Image (cartoon, rainbow, N blue to C red; front, side):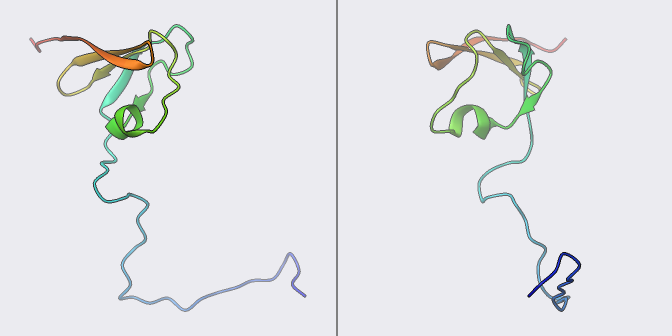
Amino acid sequence: MYSATSYFSAPVNPKRKPLTLNKPGRKEVRDWLVVEDISGDFLGRSFRAFDLFGAVRNYWPEGIIFENKKTKERRTWMNDQFVILATQQAI
């Protein structure tokens, strides 16, 4: 029987590649920033493109606005889909 103080150790293999949690084809870069959120739950948080467009079902609050940090493109969640608002040019 094992107790709470039992310690298990596996030999370390120096040739083994480090474990990664990223799945192929998914970027970890969080380019989409919440700039407007009526509920206030997501305001100021960043998300991956997969979080916005790749999920099977999205449950974003109605009217939430995301802005791409690089392109300044804005999208809002209305009627269970994203609507492109505008692309603002950097000055």
